[in-house]
Structures are given as structure tokens and as C-alpha cells.
Length: 206
Image 1 (cartoon, rainbow, N blue to C red):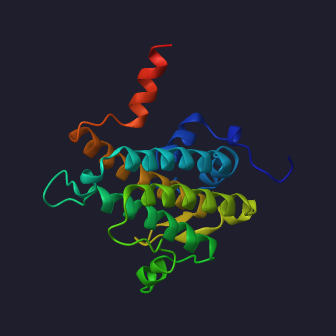
Image 2: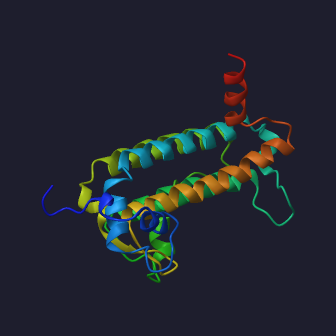
């Protein structure tokens, strides 16, 4: 289309420099084309839903006594990990939808609290799992309703890095994926096979 740059106008090397976040390329015109034309919002949202549903399933799979389990003495409890995933996901996307474009503001943590779940600190597994599922559905519906320019707009993360809103959404998803992995380790240490492994094993038997 006239007035638009295609990714094919760049070399394969340049594309990979963008994908891998090479210095000097992360905020180049190529990366803006890559993020706008090759990374689809609906794919990111669908992926986040999948990750979140497995997080919620992990909470349901953990026995009630295991909610206070810590993989190491100085780590978060399983329940705290689930609460952190819930409140971080709701808070960060809530601020995105509210139009905040500078997360490095001194009021950041207070603003995050405005989007917290409100669940008690000793919430049981079923309550946590239900809140995790309801939150991601609500946030994804609101994000899916945003225009393309919302996601291409620039913002500042809480660590000072400038990203597009779509890149921030990717960051939120990857943050949750990290903590979901921690939760899976806790499940394993309590003799529970995570849902992702159960699905893979079931598929192998077909």
C-alpha cells in the first residue's frame, strides 16, 4: 500500500536484529513495521489467555495445604505468586487502558493498587482461580476493543525503557509466564504434574 513500508524492504539480517533486540534496532523504523505488521494484537491476547488459564489451573491443581508452600525459604508462597500474577496483570493493563504513558512516575505503585483484585490475603484456591480467569477475560475484551494506534503508541516502562503499548503487553505476558513456571516447579515439588505436561502426554497417547 502507498505510504506504508513493508518488512520485505529490509534485509533478513535487519529483521533478525529487530527480533532479537539488537542495540540501535529496537526502536528503528523496521521494528515499528515489524511490530505493526507481523505481531498481531489478537495473537498476543490469545497467548496471554492460554498462559493465564494454565496459571489458574495450577492454582486449582495445588492441594489447599500447598498454597503456603515455598520452593525456598526466601521465595514467595504459591498463593502469593498467584496473587502477584493476578494483581500485576490487572494493574499494568489497567494503567495502559487508563491512558498512562509513563510508568516511571512516583505514584506508580499507588496507581497500581487502584486496579488490584481486592481478594483477601488468605484467599482460597477456587477464589484465586476464578479471579485469575475473570480478570484476563475482562482485560482482553477491553484491549481488543482498542484501535491500532493505541498499541503503536509509545510509553515508558517503570524501569525507564521506552516501548510501544503492544511491546508492554508482551512484557506483561512474559512476566506472567515466568511466575507460572515458578508455580509449576512448586506443583512438581508437591507431586502434581502441571496441566501443560498432562496435555502433552495425553496427545502422545492418541
